[in-house]
Image (cartoon, rainbow, N blue to C red; front, side, top):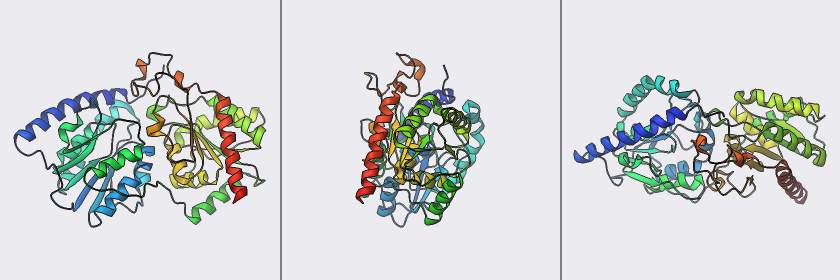
Amino acid sequence: MRRQINAPTKFLDRWSGHLLGRCLGGASRALGRFGHPRLPAPPERILLIKFCCLGDAVLMPPALRALRQTFPKARITMLCTPRTIAVFEGSEFLDEIVRFPLTGTRGFGEFLASGFAFLETLRDLRSRRFDLTIDFDNYYNWTTFLGFAIGAPVRVGFDPPGQGRRFLLTHPVPYAGDRHMVEFYLDLSRAIGADTPDKSIEIAISPELTHWAEERLSGLGLARDGHPLVALSPGRSEAWHFIRWPEENFVAAAESLHRQHGAHVLLMGGKAEVEITRRIAAMLSARQVPSLQTTGTTTLEQSEALMKQADLLICNDSGPMHLGAGVGVPTLAVFGPANPARWGPYGSRHRVVRRDLDCSPCLFMGKLGKCPRELLECLQVPVDTVVRVAGEMLDRRREGVSGG
């Protein structure tokens, strides 16, 4: 059974963070230095923290928009990692991005090795005297410690049950229930009076990138013959590599859509998915189903532009799922243990397929070795179900185009 490589890191983070939070929070309260229960004045310097993950970052624009609209004169800084920085670069809501060199995908050693960078980052941020920090992470306890350690008097963050984050936060925000993460992220900005009616996460594609995508697909041999283009993104983040619909299921679904709808197949993903898509392409070729391959050869912006060209995206519960929804391509996501009400593709055009098990959504996310059933039985979603729903989405897409 394959385990997530970050399990030891998460174990250490949870328990050390819990104990550290209790000790530091209690001591600072006793000394009268804990912070302020409300903003004493409009903040001039705001630090936002978001280390993980790509898909999560795609869902944050409404919260960032609320902060920018409410505090237009504030300097807003984003502290992020290589996993999220591409989403934030060029954001109209941010003034500055600070990069912290932690991928979270290389196991416990990387976590320990980041200690020096952590101290350097802490020293730099503390010297800036931020008025407010908002921790958008919901995976690590030590990001909450970071907001506390830089000395910000107002500190906002999630308060998941049993993690002890509240001990270091002036504004602990409840993190429970079946609302979408877009709303949870907005709750963080709402905690200090920032809200917005505009909850869109639309990712704009420039005319230049649109032209590039059209030329790239044409160069790969895509015939614009009226048949739909179906993009497949069969990967998942390295830390959660085991939460994937099986490769052979992607192959079977693509073959069925090719036979039934004449669909062209586009394989997409990052460098970590190159081998996966090569295997899928080889299996499709053996079934006389041609495919186009762009995996590992594009930037994030180029991938978004290519997705925009598709009529349908079929993917796992993953970052590309949120990117697809962001660019507006109808997105069909295969879900396993996660809660689709919270993490599903955002918007009414998209669909989720999953097994309706009595243990789903899973209570053991992050500890899948404790699964009381056969591991990841929840991912055994029938191919026929995916093909049926995909066909319905393609029919609606075609009717919408025809009716326009």
